[in-house]
Amino acid sequence: MHLKTILLTRPPGANKSLADLFRADGLLPIVRPLIELAEKPVDLEMKRIALDLDRYDKIIFVSKSSVRFGLPILENYWPQWPISLEWFSVGPGTAEALKQHGVVASFPDLAGSEGLLALAGLQEVAGEQILIVRGAGGRELLGQSLGESGASVTYLETYRRLLIQHDFSDLVAGSIVILTSAEILENFTSLSAESLHGYHAVVPSSRLEGIARTYVFQGVTNAGGASDEALYDAVIKVINTSGKANE
Picture: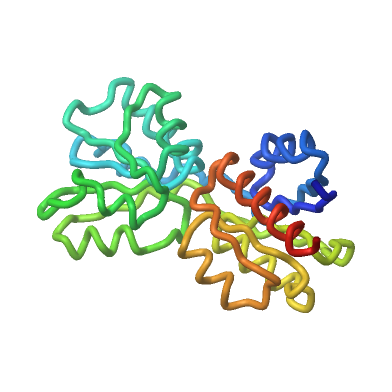
């Protein structure tokens, strides 16, 4: 396997295990987070939503970060969860994060709002109260779709995303860049506009693949998931494919 540079851009603290996988293969991971997550102070509106948790029929967590920042807020007011509350997560990684807190959630095999909306438990929601736990300014597809199906949707926004600036002038042509959110992708493209044609982007979903293909990357690969395993497998496939092309 040829030595290859892989840029890891997830928030601080979220890159180590994936970097270790690449190092074990003799690859060169470079960790430069392009986004930072900051906890939102609990205000009166957030407290009101938390206190009203038993009024909701369903609760949805849209990321592992929503579990990290959101669940402790709810736990402060609910030592025992409302019995009738149904729990959902955007994918298996988020479901595992909830499981570590003793919560069992329904989730789609392929992470994403589209898969989540296809679950049987979210098909007949007319008249239901649904709480979505997310970061400030998150994607609107989930809430809009549930609202159009007759549900009343409330957002509990528990963290903010802060962009991080970097100089990528030392990133070599042919590098693979892992971009796991729209904010990270847009930040990277704005910082590296003149060099995008030299990088291969690896993204976790069809939605991000579509966004990435509007830019002039050398190539774009959809990993089909945001787990370390999915991203690792996608990067190795890119390397093996490029290696065969150069033989």
